[in-house]
Amino acid sequence: MHPLRFGLFLPQVGLTWEAIRETVLAADELGFDSVWFVDHMWMRGLPDLDLLEAWTLMAALAGLTRRIRIGTLVLCNSYRNPALVAKMASSLDQVSGGRFVLGLGAGWMEEEYRAYGYPFPSARVRIEQLDEALHIMKRLFTEQRATFQGKYYSVVDAINHPKPKQQPHPPILVGGAGERRLLRVVAEHANIWNCPNNVAAELPQKLLALRRHCDAIGRNFEEIEISEQCVFIVGKNRSEVERKTAAAQALLGAVWDIGRAFAGTPQELVKAFRERQRQGVTFFIGLFGDLNQRESLELFAREVIPGCG
Image (cartoon, rainbow, N blue to C red; front, side, top):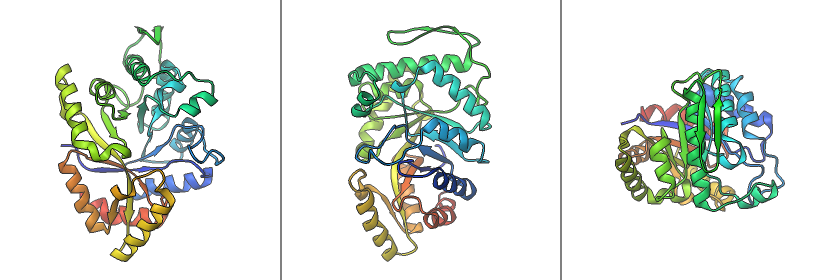
């Protein structure tokens, strides 16, 4: 079984560069495994707030951090040519010293596609495109000259140097939960599957579907690390937990299921994460309910992470 680890979800909506830098440097110092950004032009429901572009942000942070891994939850496959993404990923993996995680998804925010002039095909087509994109990326990561002819994408004798620092390539995380097609892509390509917050209650069913896809293609299900997108609420005592939970409901309740948040004192959280580990999740990527305040990060890093080690 994979060891428990904890990533910090940091949607960059409404945050200045200075605020993001401060939080990421704190997470790097405190021992979080990774930090994760969103790949959007704006946030649904909050269109007028600033939102820095993910690749630019990750490249800047790679040069400032020492050990923390950097990724997206998740890149929208539709927004970039997959061969270019492979080049960008290889470069960022080199720049970061082998700390990049390639998080990908099929895309979903139709109004964003329309506004920026991207076609918005059916979910089936978007997932087929994601599958082809991953075939191309993996070839560019590992082959001297990559050739692939698909229904949607193609490359011919494409060259990608330097290769990623991590071999054979950066870990590939695929986010999404469609049982028939998306989890089939996970089974074939992913090192990590991320269970979105809005389907976390259906985890046993999703894992069963993923296992069936692995069996169908002859892949060992245990090779795939299971991660969960979630909310962390940590308090020194029960009254503080209750206060922070109420605040999180007011701040995030329109988007996140706060009822499913990992909320409690450090001792209670260690117990909750251990229970979720028994259900198959070993990688928790969480947004703190107080929007990642330093005090909460410090308490979590000091008492929860070591307790789960």
